[in-house]
Image (cartoon, rainbow over all chains, first blue to last red; front, side, top):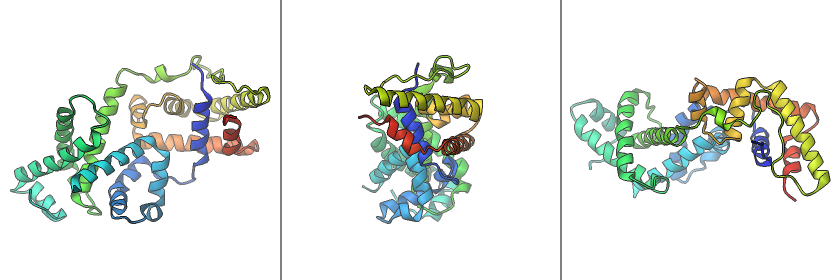
Length: 78
Length: 207
């Protein structure tokens, strides 16, 4: 097996967005319900909670859970 | 179904009205998960969601003291249910795959890294080969074995963090920190060599 240029690009993208201080998945999870309610209320959650936004941009499993949670909450309010 | 405040949810789930509150919560979670997972689960959606909801209720009752009241209780509960569902779906999806399956050949010394999709432009190809050798050398000399393994399993193998963590006898948080350190280490090494990640990226862009 060979590492493709796609893998190198993925690696460089993640290095590019690396910050000295980042939220872990656990911290992001703790804040996620608050973040998502702000989104649902039409508030600027990204601006209010930039570290959560950055983590979601960077971490595919957390982003996947966030997107599904958003859908689930939409179904709950219908 | 009756509408409850956060305090009412908590007191009902802890008190005399527990049975009804659990039933109401089950209905809320099920509705959300069925809608949200319908595009991801193609067979037996209803039964799978039932199992997720069942496990979620147990988790919620167990973790209720950690609810900080910063959102609606049902938002928090749905968050727990989504995590429970994904943990199980990922476990199922990756159950027969080991980390070793995801490593490139010759993973013992982690060489050689070779382009699988060479650029038609010889000059660009040469630059890419040079950069690949440099990245290979950085990964070998600057990262620990665990950092290297986790990085390749995720970036190359596409395995989710928690599945890599389970196989490496650690947890998602600790693995995230390990990878964060690895990314910082690689970024600093690139900068020492006078390169930014953006410049490396540019060399691998098509065209």
